Image (cartoon, rainbow, N blue to C red):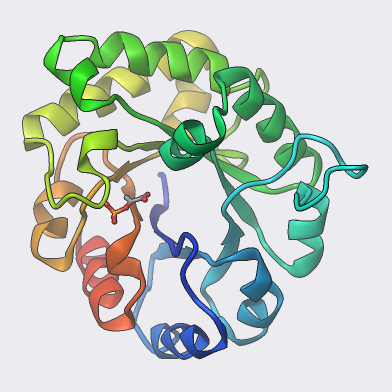
Length: 246
Ligand code: PEP
């Protein structure tokens, strides 16, 4: 059985005051599911101290363990601060920093070296969706971004259509199911059924309390990666409750 996962991504939002949202989340009943918040790196250490059962994640890491990389954070540093996971290959990093699949694979290996779970993001642009390239884009990203040796403990895949992130637009449930079923099949071909069945697949892109229940009922959706609606405990707790009830 895959434990369902509600993962929040605060992106570049949150200073000390935002920690009160985490304090509120502690009292939400999340029995039977995992809840993770990827805070800004500056908050990880303090977030871990107050998060209770909520796990704290990073939003990126460098591929190297240490060295002359001004401004970067290594996977070891995230783990040392108390993070248990790291988001890698988010479309904003692929777009803003030109991260390639090979970069994401190297970072994933670094995350695994620090015993962090890698939440690897894949997803098509609107142009790719409209030209019928979605599945081939996702296949290429999966192959290139996920190194050999994945397991259900070390890897989570987040399917995040770029055009659905922060836009209020959500694919149809059929479109989500098609891609999630495809990802499961691709993982099965590569890693075998036992490993593939243990890897959690998250949907990400404009998930809100109002659409969470139907998304969580969709084939091969094991939870969500949530941006905007993870910033406020009131919103995120609605998503947590929907997932716990799914
Ligand atoms: C994201 O950035 O990973 C995301 C899914 O954002 P939002 O929920 O705001 O669309």
